[in-house]
Amino acid sequence: MKMNIAILPGDGIGPEIVSQALQVTEAVCKKFGHDLTYKHALVGACAIEQTGNPYPDETHELCMQSDAVLFGAIGDPKYDNNPSAKVRPEQGLLGMRKKLGLYANIRPVTTFETLIHKSPLRTDIVTGTDLMCIRELTGGIYFGRPQGRSEDNNVAFDSCVYSREEIKRIVELAYKYARQRKKKVTIVDKANVLCTSRLWREVAQEIEKQNPDITTEYMFVDNAAMQLIQWPNRFDVIVTENMFGDILTDEASVITGSLGMLPSASIGLHTSVFEPIHGSYPQAAGKDIANPIATILSAALMFEYAFGLMDEGRVIRTAVDESIKAGVVTEDIASGDKSYKTSEVGKWIKEYILNK
Image (cartoon, rainbow, N blue to C red; front, top):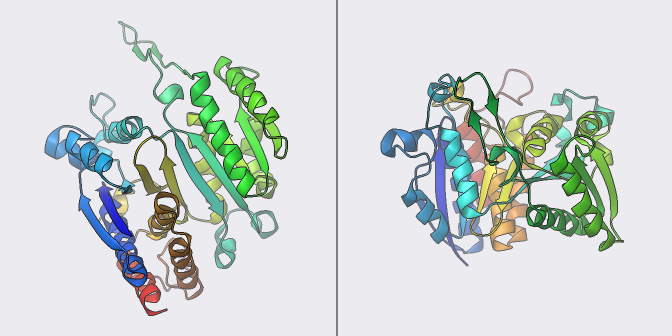
């Protein structure tokens, strides 16, 4: 198969972790005989520095012309510490999602048997956790207008806006994935307070009637946040709006013991984007200590979701599992004094794939 990929390393540790995922991708393509081509492009703070735009037109054109996008992370303290900055790296990510029509972010949350002791939760709580969070990406308060400040600069306001169609397509996607899993959907909202959430629940109830074989439950977001920690095993597919999903998925990520372990796929109208759920971790940039596994597992999702190559994705997951069992991991999940560099972990996984 011919595979044409856009590589967007971004900021901070992005170039280091994407480099390892790209090595693994090349190894898988070599093993299975795929024809891989790729090209790098700028996004985030590095794009601002060179072009003044966090998501340049050239980057967007490359994404549109590619079969998939492998993305690292964006963000820089220079902008985080400047509340008056008019252009920010994060605008590049939001712009990419909007222009590519990436309305759904899919985040699988699973535990690794050899890493359960790293979770802040008790072993009996997290063992066997296997859930999927589906977050709406292009609507809600992050994109709602009007947005701004009053003339005297003493009042700020944001608007949370959703259309019936935006809700319908994401909820239908949740039922699609639930049918392939344990056939349970949890709709998370705040319908007792927010008008947008009441529309979410209204639309979801209509779709529920069309899927009688799927168990459906409705849960307020504060209750969902609590139950994710108390009983993560009770969930199968969680679907929710943009801001709620942003918060809940980061909360769910600690179940595994490290933010550096969880991949994600953003899918929608055009080219899909595959990325780790963590940020740019600027304190670690250039030190070769960041955990590349979430990005490597994002490459596994890329093979599966963008190309339908399930065996290739499975090979990557097996190699990751074996690296963890062998203790070839970075310092964030290492046991004892022995840990490996980012590049060493990537090399081990690559060589395991090529030699098995």
